[in-house]
Each structure stands twice: as structure tokens, then as C-alpha cells.
Length: 381
Image (cartoon, rainbow, N blue to C red; front, top):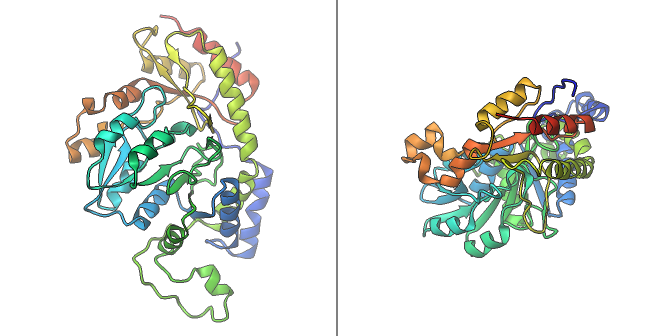
């Protein structure tokens, strides 16, 4: 097939988003304001929850939620060993101890059996990650957790459902990302969803320096010249109205984007089924996935070459790939500060070394997908 260049991911933005950002620019209201509020309301409605609190990133969304859950230095928070580093970092920001849990190598998500062995009297929160837009085994995790709080890391899972429920409906809260590699984007940005009124109120205050009244409410009130009181140590985790204006357009496209991704994920699964060294993603039961990425597993006992050589070959042919993500316990900071060894979490280690994300995004054409399949089928020793 004729040479093509296919990125691992591309945001799907256009004229509508371009026109949307003119509103905040022309009004002069660039920081958190009416567009953020509207985006929060639209996101909450789309995910069937009472509250959505916009933030600067999913990392700050996770941190904000943990602080609102009163996680501190004497607490432990369980996180999967195979995830983006931000999941663990948010715990460390609170002064708490991240406790790693191995994953199920079929799904790349938290292994309930290993989770059960990690719970102690200090466990304050469990953070299951819906990695790559596929739900963790929330039924088992909730049964094991009992009264322990669950914060869903749904960075990759906007619009995904499990048994008809969205992230934030199952756990105490859920955190989302709008990074350009996600299905919908605001450039950077995040969101926390919850049905807990008190938790939502705490997060709204904490994301705005701990102010008792937001700038929008103050400026629209009778005495905008009076500054609010500050009774809490908060953060500046506010999303801008420019970002939210983009988000308001993107959220209307979420269903379409996910439907397209599901269609092409099914295409990949069918077309790649005969490659005995490449395992395609396992879809959890009763899960409608969002497919932030399409992450396969390279079985090097059967593959014609090592995973990294396959990635190099694909790049030479214009196809950009990545490892699924990384095993956090193998990264320098965590190895050095928590005395962790590579083999402590063997499934996370193997996922780190043998997972491979191939291109799947809403800018790809049918010919692009056929090209990726063709090049994978033509890998030989």
C-alpha cells in the first residue's frame, strides 16, 4: 500500500471550536466564568450526575478530590501499578502513601484479587483506573472496598459506561482529562463528577484558593468590590472560559466520537484476530468502552521480533505507536523513594514492556485503518 503517515492520536477540532473561543475573547471574561459553569452543567448531564467541577487537568482533579476526601499524611491510597504517573503523584501531593496494586493482564486494569491483599487499617481511598477507556471491574472492587472511599480515575473514560452507569455514578467521585489525546479536549483541563453534594461544595471552594465566593458570583453581585473570605487553604485549579468554550462544542460531539472509535476498534479486533502474537483489548462484561486508545499486547514468545523493534518498523512505515502507559513502580522517583523492585508487580511489569497502542482517533480514515492492519500483517522475522 502507498506510504501514509498516521499519528498515534490527533484531536478533532474545527471551525465550531474556533468560533466558540471568540465569545470569551470578545467579552473579556477569560478566566473561570459563565462558560465554565455551562460546560460543567453539560458534562454532568451527559454523565448522569448531579455535580461536575472543572479543573486545570485530570491531575489536579484527582488531587482536588483527594483533598476534599480529607486524605492526609497518615493515610494510604491504593492505585494500580500500571497507569499514568499522575494517579500516584496526586496521592503523594496529599502527603499520603501510595500503595500499588497489580493489574489483570487481560484488561490492563486493577486486579481485584491483589487489591484485597493491599487493604490495611490505613487505607483511606482506592483509585481504580478505567485505563484506555475500558472500565475496571467495579463490581468486585466495590465489594472488596466496603466502606472505603472509591475515586475513579476516568481520565480516559469520558462517555464510557458499565452496566449503564457512568464514572462518578459508581464511586464517590470520578476524575476526567481533556488532554489532546483524549476523546474530547480543551487543550488541557479536567473535571470531577460526583453525586455527593458536600463533596462537590468542598471542591468548588478548594479549586478557587479556598474563597468563600467565586469571582463570577462576586462580580455579578451587588458589591463586587468586596473581597471574599478565605477559611480554607485552597488551590488555583480553575479552568478558563476559553477552554470551557471549546469543551462546550466538544461535549456535543462525544457520542459521535465514541461511536466511531467503537466501530474501528471492532474493525481492528476482527482484522487482527489471526495475528497469533498480538492480543487485542479485552472488553469487560457489560462495558460500553470509550477507547481513548487501542492497546494491544505483544507476545514476544510468538512474535517475529521484540515489541520495540515492531514499534520501530511501524514508525519507519509512518505509523506512530506508544507503549500503553508505564509501570509506575518501575519509574525512578517511586523506585528510589518507596524501595520498589521491577518484579514486585509482575503483570504491571509485563504490561509496561509488551503493551503497544496503535493509532485510533477521529481524524483517521478507512484507508488509514486498512494501512495499519496491512503493515501489522506484513511483519516478518
